[in-house]
Length: 206
View (tube, rainbow, N blue to C red):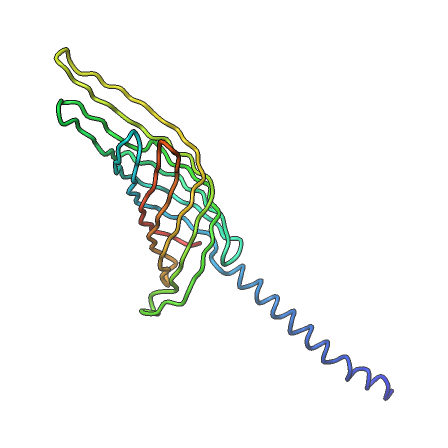
């Protein structure tokens, strides 16, 4: 009997440690399950379009849907358009060209790092930095109106390009699972066209 008591005393710390590790693992799993790692967002987009030897700035709107594998890494789908054109007018005639973005579609990997809010902690949950990298497809629309003595003519052209995309964001997350972000994105970078954007996002975490 004494040997069994001694054996029990020897293995009991190991059993307690295993039980504590199990509780800790369960706690981490519960924390992961309770955390809100999905998000949906709407972005106001201010494009900078370097195309056709000119630089124009159409504007638009994008919708984003993302999910995080853990607190730091995830994936995002982004769909947007810039229907509000920027117009280039000829100085010597009545001709003009409207530049707009038919669509932006991007599939992006994302990394996110959150920090405790330095102020207004009762309202702000965290401040975060976020990076994006992936692939994007952008279709640019040009609508030319050319007028002369014989009359006016309207020509529409569309250019579709796919490119590696990347960007960065800084934002805040509130205590009500709503966030705000300011982003810079480069969607297309080729010899004859560059499409970048400054974007403001309203995000909801679920």
